[in-house]
Length: 70
Image (tube, rainbow, N blue to C red; front, side, top):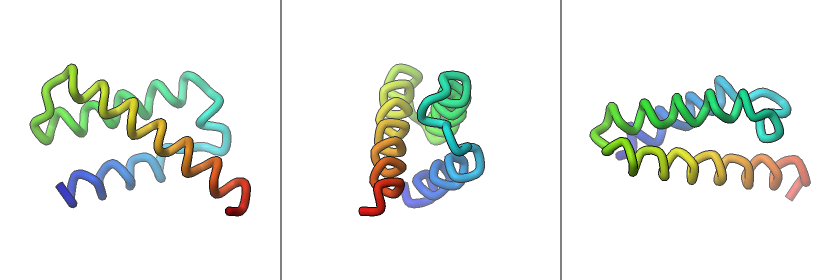
């Protein structure tokens, strides 16, 4: 599980651009990449989709928190 989390964090850090939370094309690419990683680690496709959405939502929340300086 730890390896999975590190892999996802690395992918998001490498692929997130300045305005990634506002651009649908970048969000779609990140969602697909996270979903593929989850499926590689044994998640079923439907659960991988839900988890990928959660990961992006958490990333947006963290990005907003960091941009506000909190």
